[in-house]
Length: 375
Image 1 (cartoon, rainbow, N blue to C red):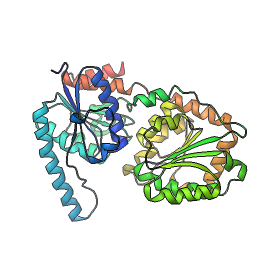
Image 2 (image 1 turned 45 degrees about the horizontal axis):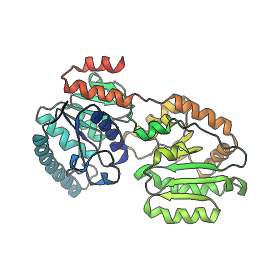
Image 3 (image 1 turned 120 degrees about the horizontal axis):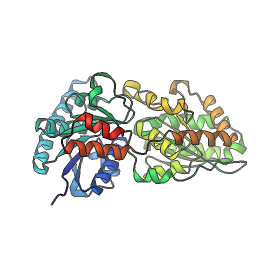
């Protein structure tokens, strides 16, 4: 017997989409809601907090590219996904459906709109992704991570920030301790499912510019694609550098907390988590991200002195080597950057998203919800 109602969350099958949905899902469960997740098959490695019978995998395809066959196949998959979603929503009878980005959110959100169920989308980035742009004019409200209340949908946008998992909030309590003298220097390098390849190429090249004393201090933890991992391990072994390499780390918050310096992309979740934990970082926006949203995500923290920001086309092996030398040789400056990154954190995003969800379930107006969130 449900106490407060049923809420369905929908998210694409990547960590960047799923982690914010997971954070909200846990908070809603604690407040007495029955929470279900709709996603695609990629999500299996990420899902932790939802029981198996509350996770629903539906058909989803993309409508990108110019290949007619690919476009037709994507449309067929989405149409089938819409049929699946409507059937599921009729069974669950949710009070609210919320989307967290990615094409798998289209069928459940469109189905909910057609069925008259209140809806909202959460856009983590400073610029909306394609799926959220398509849904924006149809949903009841839009919650923004780095998104600001501007443009055609300003009246719908409620700025909440990006919700953080409990592991990230816990890691934020770990104090930054600089590496001084000849002590080991923990370097964390990650780039997401699409952006890691560049780092796998440039990191070994950059390290060839470092002398043996500096190389001997490095302890690298790096996310790398399966097809790059063997070559990368060989390169580090040849340089005599200690390294742990994997395609995915389940304990990323812990790795961020123990890092002395981070080199990463600037997706919304990455920027939010680095700020929440408070670690110095070099942020390299993924150049093929739609609308260049990653550069805008990183801009605020970089301007506050909480991170370095450089475009990929400007980051040569020689320049990266100089950045690494600076990081190794100036621990006090890294500690100052860490403090400024931590000062940019936003820890109330989950609470604010809960207010949005509860407000929509209760039938409150967007303006009233905004006032509550901003108070």
